[in-house]
Amino acid sequence: MSWIITGSQKINWTPDAADYSLWLDADSNATLFDATSGGSAVVDNGAVARWESRATSANHVTQSTSGSRPIYKSTGFNGKKTVYFDGSDDFLAGTNVNTFLDTDSNTIFVVGNAIAATTDFSAGWQNQAFIGESSGNIALYVRSSNVAGLFTYDGANQQAQANYTAGASAWAIFTGELSGGQTRIAVNGSSFTNTATSNRISPGTIQIGRSYNNTTALQCNISEVLFSKRAIGNFERRRIEGYLAHKWGLTANLPNDHPFKVNPPAP
Image (cartoon, rainbow, N blue to C red; front, side, top):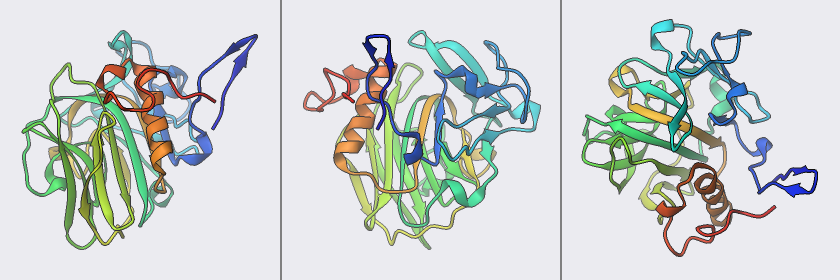
């Protein structure tokens, strides 16, 4: 964990960058660039060619095709920053295949909203995803029937699903976990919904804004992504949810008994 002191002002707890293989944060627009390497910081309504990770592993995501780049919005979410994906062909992809994903244990947090989910397939890899993998082995997706899910492929399709209200104004915190023989999903700090899995997946290229191909692209906004190559404990999960809820103005979404509904995590 980490905390910052500026003069006499103490800043609330933030995640430890070393704990994550990917940390995308639209609030830090110094991480958004108009070129896949070098370039300048993206201006409001500008196309994002590179979103740099705040994680110490420096696993950045990029898009070399100009027509498939998402758009940076400086006041797109509660007056805060976000990245808009058009649901047609916008996505960002990592280049270091084996550095993002683990075959056995992964935890994903996403702050975003699904503007228009139009798919409702029983196989999770076919649904539209906030974040996924190029071969369809893992995806945190949304279905048109107001269902969020985490899909994993371990030789057979495995998925856990949770109901929530999707839509343009339905910003949420999505938490997915693969560990301990279970695929799990939670929305806005709810209890996990679980399904059994044999755990092992085949890591491929991580993708933001879609899973397998353009048919799985999701029209959405994404403000923050945290991806860890391990299962995290319940307290750490709650602490991350509290950090995200207070940062992005989503505390009203948390259950009343969430330990960080009222106050943010302390250092």
